Image 1: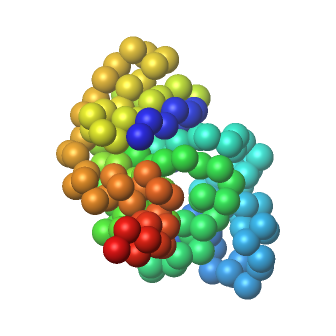
Image 2: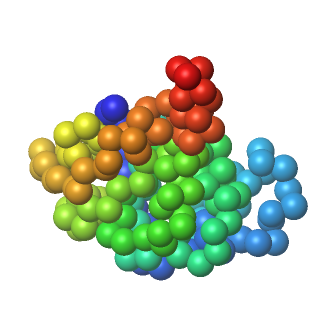
Amino acid sequence: MKLEGRALKLGDEIDTDIILPARYLALPLEEYSKHLMEPARPDFHKEIQTGDIIFGGHGFGIGSSRGQAIAAIKNVGIKAIIAISYGRIFFRSAINEGLPFIACEEAYIHTDEGDIVQIDLESSTVINKTKKLKFTFPPFPEMLVDILTVGGGVNYYKQQQMHR
């Protein structure tokens, strides 16, 4: 599974209240995008292009296990998240929703806003095509790659049921 997109770079401690502030949780999913990352970058929703990849520093997705934050990220067309470190519940919830979430400090450090990057989950690499740099990350277990390939945990479960 390969993904390619433009880097949108954020800083440290982007918690779920920054990703999608609680005051917007009652809105319909289509409205979430207008408020994505609002406390950190008020115009973030205007900058996003389908296929972009978020780069976060330390502690991306810490805080509550708010599923709406992941839904908001996916709904705007973000294809993956690369961070130095992350909230474990957020990481697993992202995988379950079919959103690759990769820990790779070197990729974060050496990637700038707007760089074009490619992620290859099977070879566990991130390639910064703009700077011609290659980084590796700890490989995902095969089952997690399978979950991501079919678009998330629900799809994976359905696929497994069909093969029984």
